[in-house]
Image (spheres, rainbow, N blue to C red):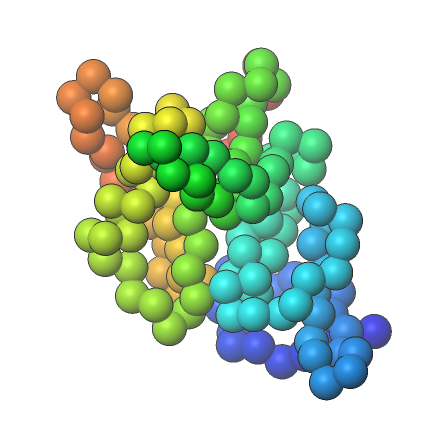
Length: 154
């Protein structure tokens, strides 16, 4: 396996499996169990998955990556969701490339997704900056958190 250099991110260092084949770089997704073309957004997504597993204790079996959902009759795709042991979505993550600034538009996007998914927590990251929020469904607001809480076993 070869290391394909991508930008250093604001995550702990993980030894992510990468390879080069036919002038293309690939990264292995441990959730989907397949090699994916290594793009800047995939680099962020795979670091985030490893962060959730290795640093926040999310069980690999409770994580889904890049699945479809319907938002206002339109098909969309979320980056990462983590479930609790009861099968309810506990965390919704939106990943962006490192060169993409996180703006209100990004928060609006994840809020639309979360309207359908009803996650208690959201995380937005471009690999360099991370935002964590607890959702207050009653007041229809999010409260910013300093850090992402670890996975809780019930």
